[in-house]
Length: 266
Image 1 (cartoon, rainbow, N blue to C red):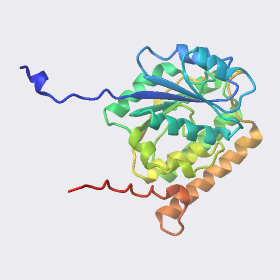
Image 2 (image 1 turned 180 degrees about the vertical axis):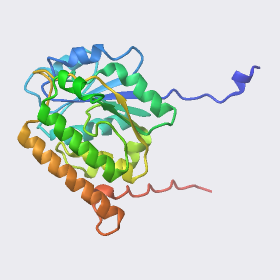
Image 3 (image 1 turned 45 degrees about the horizontal axis):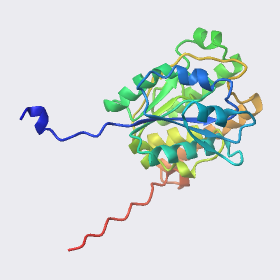
């Protein structure tokens, strides 16, 4: 018997990609084509009541498809994504938008940082340099807003991330089991809440560079909704510190109740 034969069997770690989708039929195939072979074990697409053929195309491409009967919003879509990813036994969950704005070739690199224990949460940073972001199509006003909010968030949360507002994210299972994301908004501020929660519960955050692509089919919120999102993000940072200082309690920072212990029969 060899030493290898004596070692306990190790269960393969399962990587699940989730795609919060809305009217993504024109870009879904390209996004999937860039995922490296063997990088993920399953792709779950949650269709948020699209008006196009997103769900039908996803089924043809062999994805696991969940369809919302009514539009639940970006945050509500993610809640369904993570619920099903955990139920499927995922050890690592990667969220990537199916609008081809983010380069899915980096999935393997992001997951490896999680496997090594270097980080618990990985974000894809679209902003390596100002020139690259602007030449990639990011509107000037959005770049300025991103830089301002990211700087404020880094200071408030004690981090050093390049892009707090990326739609490319990877998580260890423990993060999704600990963070009370079910209490978050169903709107776009879900992402800001999640990262503040991850910091509050002591998880390690990091990022990897992801080339930016802005074009007509890529999803993006308009200026008015961006202003609302920015103000909401600042309010979330204030909530974080009020909670940290034990001045006010907020539901988004309340830990899950402990699971009951299994009864033993003697």
